[in-house]
Length: 170
Image (tube, rainbow, N blue to C red; front, side, top):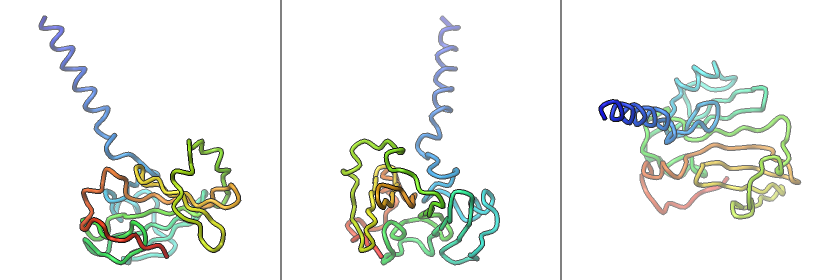
């Protein structure tokens, strides 16, 4: 009986450790919007080709041009999309956008019912599909994914300062 209890305790401890990171998934190279900081990004990616201590760092990597947007202050409103209005410290990542060097066929992503994610189509003909649960946005032109943005996931909505603030798209 004692041996069975120890086994159950060990199994429960393993389960806790195994699922501890599930709440903070790794959207892009381990950088998690609203949880990672500028220091985390620079540790992973090095010095940006453009950036400093402002709200944007720019990297040119193998897969594409990467824009990392940081909070300038907690609860800042009036910024595009999901970039502002978050109760996070200055220099916290709020959005990562990867402009792909090589486009990916949308079909390769195997997203079931992609139409339910349609957000809008801009004047250039690019259509944006936003998965609010995962915080992903795909930019698609002619059936090819040209960019992917990683923003706040639904599980982080508790960090919003104001709810019902209109989403601005520039």
